[in-house]
Length: 406
Ligand SMILES: *Cc1c(COP(=O)(O)O)cnc(C)c1O
Image (cartoon, rainbow, N blue to C red):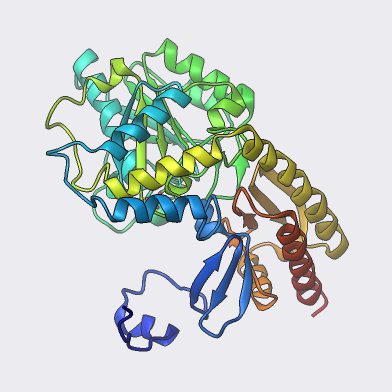
């Protein structure tokens, strides 16, 4: 039975919402695969994927099936009880990764919050209160809670909210010498995004991650990989650490993990996990049966040789055409990234104008993303059809042509 709903439009946002976002002028109402329709029935191709979240596009039958099946059984019991979907999902993640233990939460920020608290707790238990320093990287992004903006390397997100969490320093990304100079026996953890996502799609060098691993081992510090954006098939491997061949002690996941249903996870080893004893950490919704049922279905589909190989093939398709478009219109100088996390670095003439590219693409019926003001980012569904890629890139080329030719 459908209930009559009051009509709403974009203008309502400014009347009833906190103004911390600036959403586009149209309102999406329906999606199927990599196509989205707005209130007016206009169709768009989705290269944004809800910011690297809709890993299997919109309304994927396996995810709709998992969600509706679970919705008819059990929604929520809290962590006073465990539940079958959470245990099944934890088994799948443990079987597929370095980890022996999983902690579930509801977002990337919460997964990182758990990771940072675990690292500090381990150091406190093993070495005492002096060993609490966290080293992060300049321009990194780890979420919007006070701890995660303090660890994040972008002061614009942490300034103006009173005292920050202390004991955190920031070193330039991909600079092993800088990390070497900063790390000490007071360091409890080094946190790195294998590919910096929000600040411009900047992949780490293999030698940097290998060197960070060695430095952490030397100083009894834990290596945390924030894989909130790079995880769950995005790079063509289940997690980016597999692409690099460098294993962290703690890994945070979210975004793609739920394919659009909110869930986060912190993965770690048994030896570390045991420091979060009963009562030391928690969240009411963490491990919610609906979220875990969907995430299990996501993993079943994504963690297959066909889908992961497909990501690598689709990367080549995007990269070749984007390089052509960049050159033809003088719009960008470099196409970088791994798998289906791709960044186009705007040329000198277009520096700072990623929003203009976003707007031009939208006019042609294409959803893209920015990653800072200088980079246009693509994070589409991992199973996007080749026909949708071609059509989307045609639309992108039209946008580039109109933008650059006035
Ligand atoms: C998006 C993101 C986060 C924050 O995730 P939320 O779900 O928005 O809290 C943290 N780290 C990285 C690398 C991200 O890309």
